[in-house]
Structure formats: structure tokens, C-alpha cells
Image (cartoon, rainbow, N blue to C red):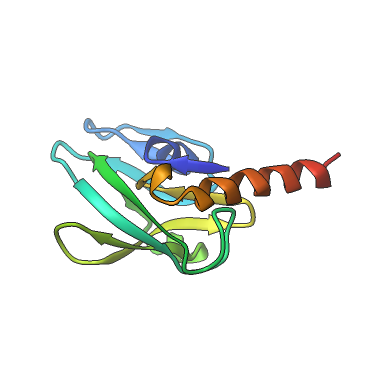
Length: 135
């Protein structure tokens, strides 16, 4: 599973709307995606992976962007899943983000696949290997 932004939100335990309602989601990522009336992130960033994943080996770099009105409220639960990405935004401080385990990667970052085509190739290879294992 590869999920960006809204996909990350869908994989969380729940989404909390602006009016305070909480809606159950898939539950694969610990925590709740909380909507905000204000923009939470906007801009370009460089991403570097901190571990091997379905996107390639540790240290894989690519570019992307964020544009979101939500944030992940993990209440400590997100510690169950390590951060995969070190994100260096064009403006602002570097931070860790993105969650992974087994064949799942989920992040708020929208990847720009052309910035490193090896990332897309690694993902397709991971899908092919998973399919072959399950055949």
C-alpha cells in the first residue's frame, strides 16, 4: 500500500472533522487525522528515506510537496510505526514524517516521481514481488 495525503488520512484510525465529528477509517495507521480550518503545510520539500521500504533502499531521495489542512494526532500511538521520511521543506525546519511497516508506506508528502524515477521502479518491483509471492 502506498498512500499520499488523503490516502494517509483514510488509513488512520479515524478522521475528525471541523465540527468535531469523528469518522472511523481503515485503522492501519495509529492515530486520528484532524482537520483544521487553517493550512497546516504548503510547499515543496526534499525527502530522504531512513530505512529500506517499498520505495527503495535507505537513503533514497526524491522531491515532493505538501498541501494540507489536516495533521496526524497520534497521542503517542504513532510510535508503534517508525517514521520513514526525513523531510526538508524549501522553507522551514526539517522534520520526520511518513509511516511504514511491511508493504505499507503512508505520508502527507505528494511525491514527484520524475524527481527520482528509481523510486517508482522500486515500488513497481515491490508490487511484482508481492504478487509473485501470493500466486
